[in-house]
Length: 131
Image (tube, rainbow, N blue to C red):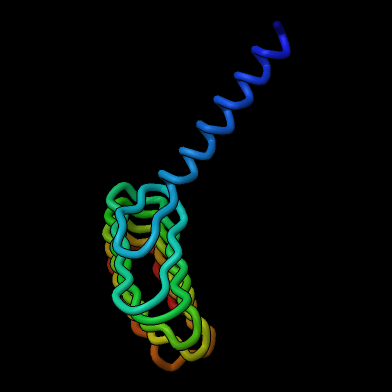
């Protein structure tokens, strides 16, 4: 009897964790709340109204909007990335060969350009850096 209850508990736990992972992540054109988002291909757009999201852009044009703050965007070579962080405390990391535009209001934002000459950043608020 005890092993049946443990097996049932394990099944419920695995199902719950799997559902939580599916909800927290997102794909192209999705709303993302506190998860990791994979984007590739033309027209990838991710919106993160609650903050705490990460977007990894591997190909094409990627737009990332983070109203809640504490978001990160990683842009691979050959990609064109735009990130808008209204909540502050966001980062944008661009590999050489990427084209990146970063707008941050709220402060505490960093843009890392990896030697790419096609980076631009606008940041309002304290503690903003462009490297």
